Image (tube, rainbow, N blue to C red):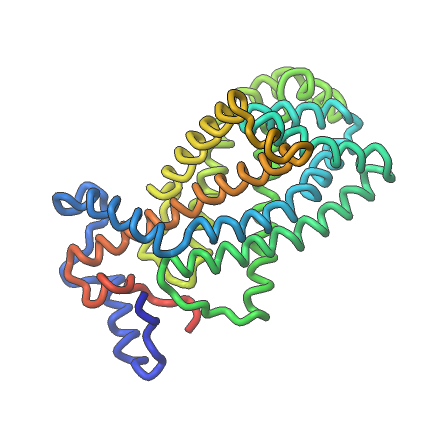
Length: 331
């Protein structure tokens, strides 16, 4: 990977960067405008860069950050729903949803410690406060690590200093937690749980029926927006335009669904982790699943970066073959 431009090239670099926003020849704006054979080249370069950038190692770093934030996040979420007096119904709802998207051993690994903390410690309010503080701290580390990984794949230097990066991580984390809470609430608040919570809040049956229908498209929009938003703001480059749904985000969701389903089938039929690791088999299974999830997310970043490279190559952008030519957010 070629190192980013030095500051001594300042004026010329800024001129070249501005030309990317208003190119004379015009980069393809729509995917259908890409030249013949573009997607084949994009797929090949994505695979090559996937290996060259060490995406599996980057996903391992994100897995570590994910585990740090997962347990306090679940405690905070269950405590939040518990404030309306519906524990353990809300917690069982969370487990039911988790069981539909993750291997059973993974759900068991998560549920035990969370249930023990909630039943043995203080009230829901105290758990919510502590859980939120720990979650924000841990999840902000995930955002910082994701930004580093995105910079590797977008071939950009890390421009933010620590005193700028830390507030940025916290701000993104808070927004992500609000959106994630909405998504989890939409998944959990269904059927009897939704009726029980609705009765506590004084919500009528008509509103619950509307909620049961409208929540699904809302969840899809929120999830795709979260992924696309993270793809947009994480790297230290300025993409030409904002897209609510990028090809990389779609690939990430599809790859995650396929790998999760395949891994679940493997665990159900072979379950070699329990044979190899004994009582630690469930923990290893959980870590592998989280690693696969982060690998799928990073694969989407790689695809989006290679699509941008192909756009630049289609108009003979100088240097695009060696380094994606986009303006930096922070020098």
